[in-house]
Length: 68
Ligand SMILES: [Zn+2]
Figure 1 (cartoon, rainbow, N blue to C red):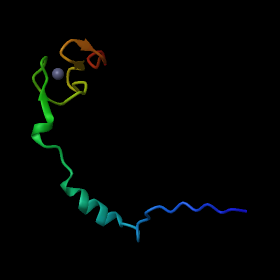
Figure 2 (figure 1 turned 90 degrees about the horizontal axis):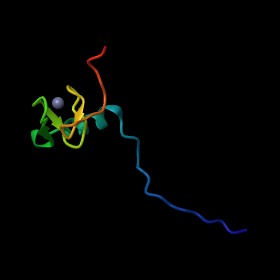
Figure 3 (figure 1 turned 120 degrees about the vertical axis):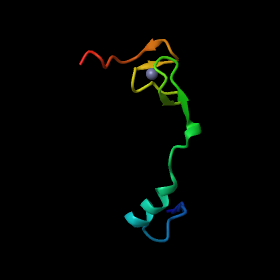
């Protein structure tokens, strides 16, 4: 019988909640990552539906929130 072992790079020890969270304190959206919505003018992340007016690329209405 032939044993085939696949070895992966394994973290030496667990990264604690605190340590992982501390590292991620630098993960934030820069202002450059936002685009102005052509319909309502609010700052929107690029390539995403505008959360305030529900449009994408200015025209397509994807979700209707106002009916609530
Ligand atoms: Zn909008």
